[in-house]
Image (tube, rainbow, N blue to C red; front, top):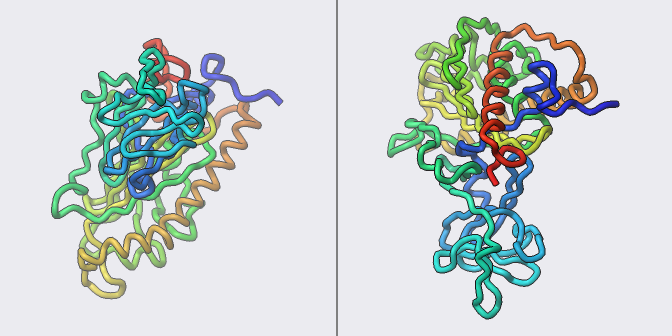
Length: 361
């Protein structure tokens, strides 16, 4: 059985979308802050490129190419001392304020600048660690999405969720904005009766809207104040490379994808609500209790719901790998619009002469 074609050999739009990487010149969420404790290191992967993300004992984050310049061991199997990442084999050190990141030192303090490794800009926002895998000179020109509801003293409650799914990133984007799959979620009913009312591509963004009944689940619907909120219309956008939705300015979410390779994607969901009500009562849940409610909701309702999407997407990935040459059959025009943006952006990335995988060397 022949494997799916690479991007250059792909014939159909779907084949091209399923082989495309993502433009590295954006900020990508790579991990939750709370999961990288001070003095620890983790491996993150952006489109087949391994990066060591480490946190100094002072709480600051740094990111570096995940290999020691000496014997090429992954630095993520090393350890952190102060604000430096130390290779597990010979103890070569990387990072820190007093020693330029990426320049190893031997035991006598002699440096070897010609062996410097690549480092990556890192920021922290919304409880997530963000990394810029592209041209570092462009890092300050690009911006992490602005989410005003999650800023300031009156910010809405949000508890991030993150998963690693065995599916291409374009399948994930297709899934979260294609509301024709309500059948998959018939147990939880996060939405139903969806009718697409608009779809427009503006530059690198695809704007769309549905008339659909949101938050009508047997349990979840008890927490939504349907008498005060109009939850029958949802606006969405594929704001490349991110995705968001808005229901009556009261129920919102963002999705941030981290493309790892052609069949693996890390996903970060931020769901946030202006308010929720106490079931069976016309009383809002107090703000101080919202965090606890959201943690329970994530575990009991939202994570199981998203696991249904994971199940479907991983099955779709397996089906595509076996039947990649099957004639595409797609009825929702938003899917084609998403794929056209994904393919165009990847063509632009390759045309810039970026290195393997689209990450500048």
